[in-house]
Length: 347
Image (cartoon, rainbow, N blue to C red; front, top):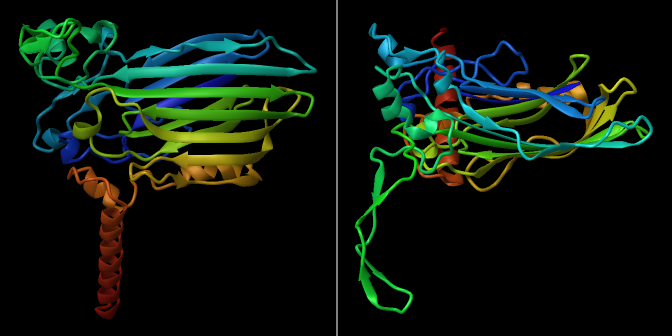
């Protein structure tokens, strides 16, 4: 049995100004099953039976951290079924189990969820306002819009080229509410070669790019194999609307496979790229290493990101490698200067 996890979370105590001060998860990249997430998805893969088992998607309680500092409670525990994230696991396929041959697993995990930590969001009126019609489990058409209609030119051309009049207002077939979705798609392919005792795994994560995202597999013996760790780009206000599908992470690796259908200790990484929004992927690792060292590549990352990333949580700056470099250079030098002054003053 394998279990594939995909989780979206914010590493800091709060989202910052760009996220309206909502509470974060205050954690790093982790395979702990007790770690909180904004959205947490898993699907069980029964290799022996060649079947997919349970697929569960949920959200941990949310609250506005900034308002809580002045004694105002604006929170939601997502206990209402209609507030749980929408999810799908299609297409998916798994070939029959073979002791002396190959077995293939393919699955595309998709989820979309909204923040309902607002006053009156548990009422029918509030739920409809914040979540719109799509929060009943239906598809999203225009994530995060204040009005359920759009504007178009009142003049158009017909098939014969003549000018024609039309309504200047377009009505959405399914209004998605004021709060935009947090969208993630995780496509995982697994090829198990039991003769050569190895498995090839590819993982491709895309979505809004915000917040952080992680994916990993856990085998029947409890062994962990990390697949992806993405550090967020942009802010909640700039990234979540309109259902983006930006590249977030790409991985291809081979892992040792043991006769009891568990991960071995050796991993060979072909590529592991985190797309940080500046156009150039962050190359995390490549080559042969222990599985523990590979997992540590992800869990040892600074999930909050460099100073430039933390500035962006509060200020929607344009994506630029030069701008990020300048911010981080300034931060390093100011920090070093502060340490030098502290030493000189005996602090």
